[in-house]
Amino acid sequence: MTDEETPIFDRGDVVYGDDPFKGDKHARPWLILSNHEGRPFHGDQYVALTLTSKSWMDGLIDIPGESWLHGGTPDESRIVPWGVQSIDHEDIDFWQGRLADGIVDNATTALVSELR
Image (cartoon, rainbow, N blue to C red; front, side, top):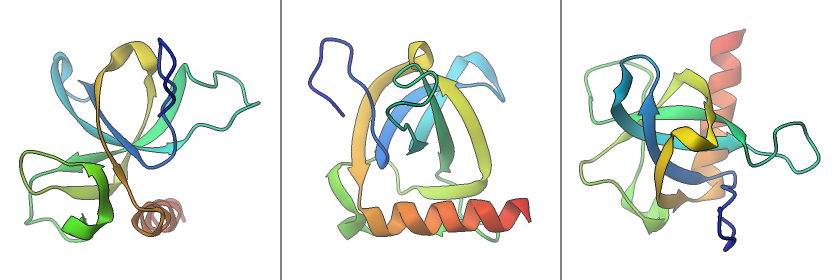
């Protein structure tokens, strides 16, 4: 995340914002996967995966404590590799933390596998 007045979130940042699956009155944590400088909508729109506190679904990616470089979630959370969404900056309420590159790469690989 940048230190600008309006921050730009980076790959690996976890943000808390609107859940488009449930409407704007509900929010959840999101893992930012893509925000490439020079691409259209840089800093305005992000490709993200949802996080969940559920554990009963197959295919979720556990987030070990050591994968959190900064911050974290109040409840133990997992990455949902098929829960991809394009979220707008205005739908993000706050920055929640940052995950290590390795788990972000694993999540990206799992998303690509879901799309094949």
